[in-house]
Length: 104
Image (tube, rainbow, N blue to C red; front, side, top):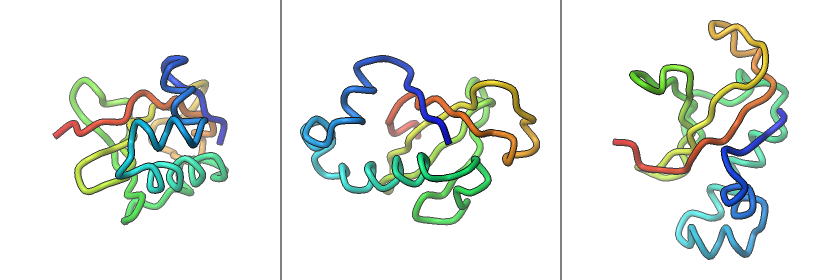
Protein backbone atom coordinates (compact mmCIF):
# COMPACT_ATOMS: atom_id res chain seq x y z
CA UNK A 1 0.00 0.00 0.00
CA UNK A 2 1.01 3.56 -0.48
CA UNK A 3 1.50 5.35 2.84
CA UNK A 4 1.19 9.04 3.57
CA UNK A 5 1.27 10.91 6.86
CA UNK A 6 -0.95 13.51 8.49
CA UNK A 7 1.98 15.89 9.04
CA UNK A 8 5.69 16.19 8.35
CA UNK A 9 6.70 15.73 12.01
CA UNK A 10 4.99 12.34 12.18
CA UNK A 11 6.57 11.36 8.86
CA UNK A 12 10.07 12.25 10.10
CA UNK A 13 9.59 10.24 13.29
CA UNK A 14 8.12 7.15 11.65
CA UNK A 15 10.60 7.02 8.77
CA UNK A 16 13.73 7.38 10.91
CA UNK A 17 14.58 4.43 13.16
CA UNK A 18 16.60 6.57 15.57
CA UNK A 19 13.76 9.09 16.02
CA UNK A 20 11.21 6.27 16.26
CA UNK A 21 13.21 4.68 19.07
CA UNK A 22 13.62 8.07 20.76
CA UNK A 23 9.87 8.86 20.73
CA UNK A 24 8.47 5.35 21.26
CA UNK A 25 11.24 3.59 23.21
CA UNK A 26 9.14 0.69 24.51
CA UNK A 27 7.19 0.02 21.32
CA UNK A 28 9.45 1.07 18.44
CA UNK A 29 9.98 -2.52 17.22
CA UNK A 30 6.23 -3.23 17.13
CA UNK A 31 5.55 0.08 15.38
CA UNK A 32 8.25 -0.71 12.83
CA UNK A 33 6.72 -4.14 12.24
CA UNK A 34 3.23 -2.66 11.71
CA UNK A 35 4.56 0.00 9.32
CA UNK A 36 6.39 -2.66 7.31
CA UNK A 37 3.23 -4.79 7.17
CA UNK A 38 1.22 -1.80 5.96
CA UNK A 39 3.79 -0.86 3.32
CA UNK A 40 4.08 -4.42 1.98
CA UNK A 41 0.34 -5.13 1.89
CA UNK A 42 -1.40 -4.86 -1.48
CA UNK A 43 -4.52 -3.41 0.15
CA UNK A 44 -6.15 -3.03 3.57
CA UNK A 45 -7.80 -6.46 3.42
CA UNK A 46 -4.29 -8.01 3.59
CA UNK A 47 -3.89 -6.73 7.17
CA UNK A 48 -5.45 -9.37 9.47
CA UNK A 49 -8.19 -8.54 11.93
CA UNK A 50 -6.61 -10.86 14.52
CA UNK A 51 -3.59 -10.07 16.72
CA UNK A 52 -0.88 -8.97 16.49
CA UNK A 53 -1.91 -6.25 13.99
CA UNK A 54 -5.66 -6.58 14.65
CA UNK A 55 -7.13 -4.20 12.11
CA UNK A 56 -10.43 -2.84 13.39
CA UNK A 57 -12.94 -0.24 12.23
CA UNK A 58 -13.41 2.85 14.38
CA UNK A 59 -16.71 4.56 15.10
CA UNK A 60 -18.10 7.96 16.05
CA UNK A 61 -16.14 10.92 14.72
CA UNK A 62 -13.58 8.48 13.28
CA UNK A 63 -16.05 6.36 11.32
CA UNK A 64 -13.87 6.51 8.18
CA UNK A 65 -10.78 5.25 10.05
CA UNK A 66 -9.23 2.00 11.24
CA UNK A 67 -6.98 1.18 14.16
CA UNK A 68 -3.97 -1.13 14.01
CA UNK A 69 -2.62 -2.44 17.33
CA UNK A 70 1.03 -1.97 18.20
CA UNK A 71 0.74 -2.54 21.95
CA UNK A 72 -1.91 -3.56 24.46
CA UNK A 73 -3.54 -0.12 24.51
CA UNK A 74 -1.93 1.88 21.71
CA UNK A 75 -2.98 2.04 18.07
CA UNK A 76 -1.89 3.40 14.73
CA UNK A 77 -4.91 5.30 13.41
CA UNK A 78 -5.20 5.19 9.62
CA UNK A 79 -7.65 6.59 7.07
CA UNK A 80 -8.11 5.61 3.42
CA UNK A 81 -7.12 8.09 0.72
CA UNK A 82 -8.31 8.36 -2.87
CA UNK A 83 -11.23 6.49 -4.39
CA UNK A 84 -12.40 3.36 -2.59
CA UNK A 85 -15.48 1.43 -1.49
CA UNK A 86 -15.75 1.59 2.31
CA UNK A 87 -17.45 -1.82 2.29
CA UNK A 88 -14.68 -3.50 0.24
CA UNK A 89 -11.29 -3.30 1.95
CA UNK A 90 -9.53 -4.64 -1.14
CA UNK A 91 -10.25 -1.30 -2.85
CA UNK A 92 -8.25 0.63 -0.23
CA UNK A 93 -4.72 0.75 -1.64
CA UNK A 94 -3.60 4.11 -0.23
CA UNK A 95 -3.77 5.16 3.42
CA UNK A 96 -2.81 8.12 5.57
CA UNK A 97 -1.35 7.53 9.02
CA UNK A 98 -3.16 10.04 11.20
CA UNK A 99 -1.72 9.42 14.65
CA UNK A 100 -0.33 6.91 17.14
CA UNK A 101 -2.30 6.99 20.37
CA UNK A 102 -4.32 5.32 23.08
CA UNK A 103 -7.86 6.37 22.18
CA UNK A 104 -9.59 4.36 24.91
